[in-house]
Length: 296
Image (cartoon, rainbow, N blue to C red):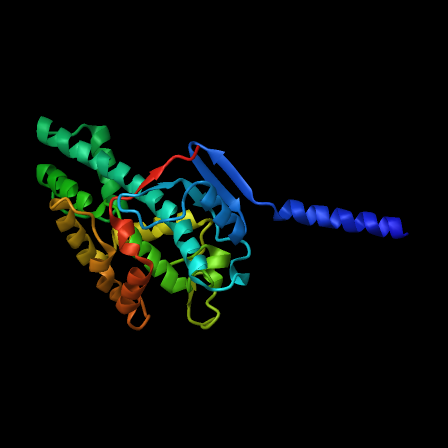
């Protein structure tokens, strides 16, 4: 009987250790982390030379976490944990920015084609209309005036977002990832869904008529947030400021856009909280033309 109990104990320990092991896939020059503890995440960053996110024109490894670490809530709050949070989000934000720039290049190519040839073919027009609809650009104009307007306004909406603003707001809205939404639903920005049975019921307002949107991954959440910032009327000023930065060949800085968060948050003094987070963690440096690099 003792032998049987010992065997069962060893088997249970073995099974637990198997399921506790980190799940990491390497493909196309990137590491895709399905599951890991906080310590394993920190070791991974150390292994790939990702200890410092303060580098101006820094190149950061393609390490993409699907979720926050499994033991995130159990880890004591300190600067090291917060800096781990930043390092988890930064590569994902840069990945989304790469996707946005690829879409922007499509529209820039269409613009060059139109002004060089005076027209767009059926396939090119369809692509322009598709991107205009995605980025919520609308006009009742027809013909050449319509094409020119769609090209101009779509380019204004399709552009990168400052990593600093994306990280700072995620940190504030989720209390550095401690919130139930962040841990259970990969939700970093408190996106509300009204009059639906989908999503997560808010714990403090179960009868409020709304839920919070849940995402399959952190990447999906960040992608949705970027699209909102690039389309919603609340962020017209953000896009106008970003356009000015592009004209003078300067990256858009999160600090200059912090006040715009006032229209999208019920947090008191959200601009001040963002400014403090920028300053304390030196997030403004992540806006200086950061790039991703492949992992070997």
